[in-house]
Amino acid sequence: MNNRLYGNLIFELSKPGRRGYSLPKNEFGHHEVPTEMRRSEDAKLPECDELTVVRHYTNLSANNFGVNNGFYPLGSCTMKYNPIINEEIAALPQFAALHPLQPEDTCQGALQVYYDMQKALSAITGLEEFTLNPFAGAHGELTGLMIIRAYHQSRGDLKRTKVIVPDSAHGTNPASAAVCGLEIVEVKSTAQGVVDVNDLRGLLDDTVAAVMMTNPNTLGLFEREIPEIQKLVHECGGLMYYDGANLNPMLGVCRPGDMGFDVMHINLHKTFSTPHGGGGPGSGPVGVRKGLEQFLPVPKVEKVGDRYHIVTSNDQDFNVHVGEFFGNYAVMLRAYTYILTLGKEHIRMVGPLATLNANYIKEALKDVYELPIPTVCKHEFVFNGLKDKSTGVTTMDVAKRLLDYGYHAPTIYFPLLFHEAMMIEPTENESKETLDEFIAVLRKIAEEAKATPEEVKTAPHNTPTGRVDDVLAAKQPILTWKQLSN
Ligand SMILES: *Cc1c(COP(=O)(O)O)cnc(C)c1O
Image (cartoon, rainbow, N blue to C red; front, side):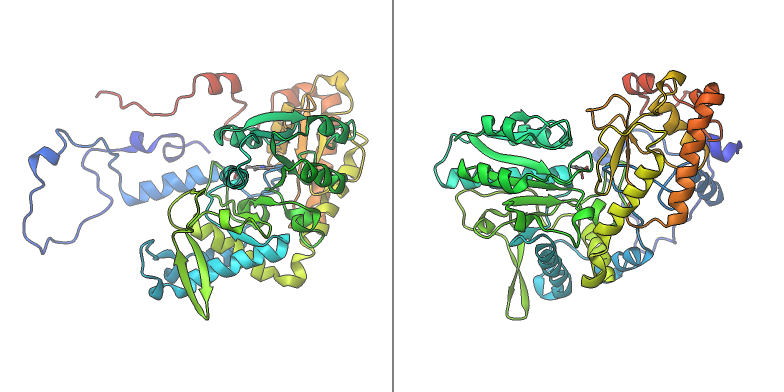
């Protein structure tokens, strides 16, 4: 499509004096804004009629690719379907119009939802208590590490300043540890892609605050040595942190609390289906085992009899504080709706289905795409580009070509363990038909790479924007529009 309403910025569609609204007649008399508070000149806002605005933004939205457009196998990010009922519940005025400072008597229902969600997460993970206050996965990690630090400090154990992080970890793990003022020590992976217990053994001493583990790890593999690892870490006085950003494959299968983890976070926006991307909004609840509840941040919701109360102080010397109010409440509502929609019985199927879907794709393509770690995966797995490296077609080219066929690309060039990484995560939502079509397209691209490599290397050809210069976009991003003087 190529017309005026599509290719232009809203500012370029502006016509001086054009209006898209009219204010009601003033019934309240004339009030002047004091001169010192006024602009010296009018704000440079676009002036458009309503129809132009609607068409402009509708066309722009069609320029994007989302879960509602097609298959979106973005490994590690879990682009799950967001059921419409989630949105209906989150939009109820009784929730949407809540005020953060509303007296607790007037929002008992909202507090109950917070409390019950916290309990639901405890049941799902086997941990004692949760805070829903953190605003993202990374924020949850930071909160969890602050809790761990507060725990060690409360015992006067001040030399524990190190956090051990696997080399395959999500980048937010070392980043959160650094923001928390802790020192990062990397533990190696084995050739099978899991934490190397021998390497870990050599790193453990009385300066270790915690070991952060992601399970399944970033390669989609289950960390089989957790029983041994948690024993070693606890023996040396450290705590076990579980990065549960991607809890999907564990749902109904096993619980971090039962495996010996002390603190964890969950990404509600990955595991429990809420829209995310472009940086938010998210929600990263943090759970702790029994004995660490007192380090959870306030505010929290307490239940006394059948009434819910907001607790704003926990009388601790080592307070963990991560934000006012109750986090991204509307994200939590959507996730809670997803949990209740599935119910105890069906939530057990999430893990097995996510795992089955990933393994189905992996097995169907491993003869044409290189599978560096050929074991059973959990909810996602990593290919190392095309098996036939002689064509010169890279993972980037395959990813761009997928767009031509109406599929979002997988996560590419992450994790950093393989040069041509392609990380595929189908989620539990997708039908066998969708998976089969996706497999057929990836096989077709593998054939094109041999027969017509130029076509793949110059893709995409069918999208509104062709291949962009990534380096230029990263080095010289143009993020603002400068008004041309007219
Ligand atoms: C996505 C992710 C995170 C970070 O979550 P954000 O909400 O993006 O901050 C942390 N760890 C893992 C394993 C993840 O996949």
